[in-house]
Image (cartoon, rainbow, N blue to C red; front, side, top):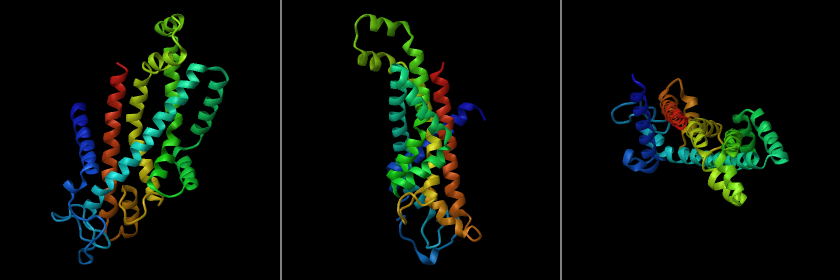
Length: 265
């Protein structure tokens, strides 16, 4: 299969999942919170594509309706990391000196801690909830964005047009945002696309551990957690939501790497 076919499939997968998040009732009109006890533990079929769970709820419906919370948390996490990391990298790279040293030592500390472990520690301190999960994951990702932004700012800061702007008397904030940031953001946006898939995994992992939305509200990670006690009799409760997460993560990575290559041409 050619790389363009793989890219096209990846785009379709991401678009479908976005459709799940925006219009869940269009893709699954059933109620994700209530089930029919008489239909519990039904295997995947034409009537129940992903089977049913231990109280007769349609697993496919719960996956579709859980997309909204999972993707919202992921986007919020990436947004926090993008904004905070870009600001830190911009200040460190443009000011230099003690400011650069301070921010980069903080970044080094964050990078020395495994991202999932740091997210787990933060969400334990913040408390349960989808927003807190997103904040924890976002903070754990800040260091990567700060490093990339700083390296690009250091490169652009030495450019002739930046020196000409300073020589012309243009104010420092104007040069910073109009010239330096404007010509440094492309690799950072590429990193955001690549990190989107990792953020989905991190959000799902914390949801799996019980830090996400309160049951019975569906989230991708919590769906897998609900089914782990029934693997012997209902493998589909964990396997099929897990395959959805894998498909979205791989698709996001493929699209992100395409952006990355395009940004470095």
